[in-house]
Length: 285
Image 1 (tube, rainbow, N blue to C red):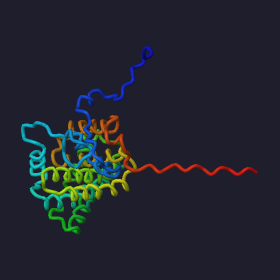
Image 2 (cartoon, helix red, strand yellow):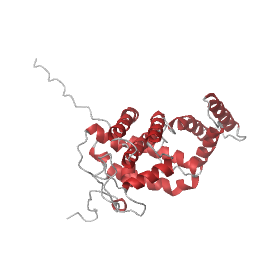
Image 3 (tube, one colour):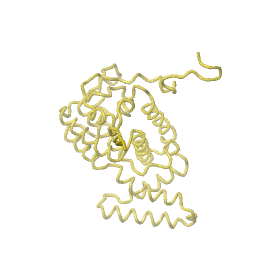
Image 4 (spheres, one colour):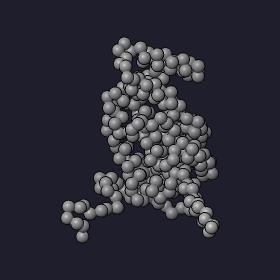
């Protein structure tokens, strides 16, 4: 019996998140690194109530839009414009090279320099210099629309100033490659489930996403924070109003992944722990 005034301990301290379905595990014989690679996309397998340890998006369930295969086809077409294996591979190659991460790496430091400047930019001269720099970079890189970087700069600055990034870790992450890498896994699993890719091809792409994630992030906490910053940056440029509630909702989903005992992020570490070496015993004098 717990002591008076002390709440009883529970295995998962957030009942509102526990209302979701249990984490799904198929029991497939995957290696530790295969599980780590699949776990890069754990946000999606959790949202989809899908297996964490299999390429196929199971278990099957009734849905008004169809079975898992039909849902995968619908999502790939609607959200990604992907209708076959070639388009799936092209999208994953772009994600591995960096889809939104390189843009964020250009825009975010300039926005933070402007937001955190000690002197007020009364006439907008600092912001104008930043915009001119981004136009030059866009033209130098051969972007179809260099003004897109300027647009991202203005929107990201606005999102930060009006408090639509309050759900993010502080200081704001400087890197959002996790956002791109998590989506490699999501696209690979959907494309395999849709019948667009063979299993060996899907696994190849999923496994290619693991090394860059391990190089950039020490643990799932860092990975999750960077993933959410990436979603926030993308969502701000798509629909700023969605950030107000959508960001908090996704933060809670990450909290579930970080803390729930059956989460893949609790079952295996992003980077394999180095074995502890015992200090050699001192020789008696």
